[in-house]
Length: 380
Ligand SMILES: Cc1cc2nc3c(=O)[nH]c(=O)nc-3n(C[C@H](O)[C@H](O)[C@H](O)COP(=O)(O)OP(=O)(O)OC[C@H]3O[C@@H](n4cnc5c(N)ncnc54)[C@H](O)[C@@H]3O)c2cc1C
Image 1 (cartoon, rainbow, N blue to C red):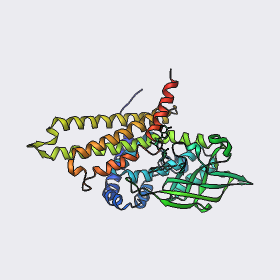
Image 2: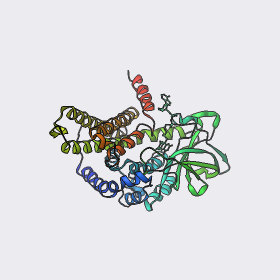
Image 3: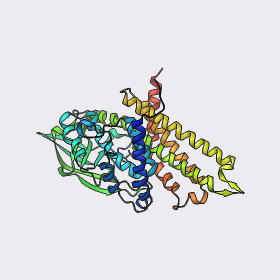
Image 4: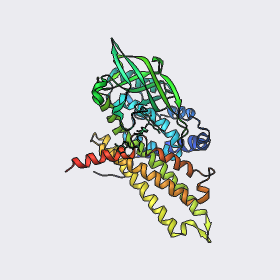
């Protein structure tokens, strides 16, 4: 059965998060962007209102939202400020390997950490020499008795400067390539050091840092799954979280469309509002169609995940399409606002800068197309 309407509970969730985004995120978005201020206060409030850590199951004290509900939440965050949205959702990304692949003891300990009190988590996969090719990671975790000793460095770790829990991907058998990678739950207090922070083009309310691991000793019980399982954990996690990234991109694009419509309705040139010019009408029509199409792909990917149906292709399609249309729609919004679109007095230039990241993180658009092409080639 196919349905395109949300349930009453989902509508209520959307209204609640939209109110949070309007009241607590939007008013701070410009200042935090200009100053590169990490949105700790917004995250704390999102935690208190159970908007953060949304996918932690109810049995561990979380809201237990479905993937579709997470997508609804993230669209609203993206429409207000995706820098803040990324910071909030990075917690979910970091906790997803524990939710999806962790054992009961790990869930009981670390998911409850995050529902009992406000804590920040980070996902450490990327390294300077291992970005799209995550399997080339050089960080190692070598077993010594009841511990693993981690050595190496990660980069672009979202929330890295503020997190006290890290899910770290490191090789337990360096000669085996991706088959030697394992995933670990690492507490900051085990000796994790924060390195240089990135100074970014957009999403400046979020924080990305290098992370250094120098003889960090982690109890053997903190391995997620088993040795050599790490690449599967990383890829399985990203398959699940990509619909959320797509939803953030939909939110950015929707906001850009709203800003462009509002401006074009009131801006008079040649004696009429811009919306009376067919060239502008066609732009708005294309923008609106792209937003709807991206949302449908996103909800489809989330729905498949909720129904435990394999969705590597669909989540890659959603992330790829939504990221691309966010860039296109925000660029058109800048064009429709003309000179004002290029000015920081109006929000669309920030939306355009924020949109660019949606084509890069959680797997670039090129990598999504490789995933889609591989799946399409199979289906004959
Ligand atoms: C703001 C921000 C936040 C991030 N947050 C996190 C985080 O929390 N945790 C984390 O682990 N990582 C994070 N990342 C890292 C991000 O996932 C990587 O930047 C991304 O996967 C790309 O890797 P790279 O930057 O090394 O680019 P590269 O892999 O060097 O790619 C450069 C270019 O080459 C293309 N390319 C590479 N290989 C191929 C190929 N086989 N075929 C075609 N094209 C190819 C890429 O698509 C890209 O256009 C973040 C990055 C940013 C910018």
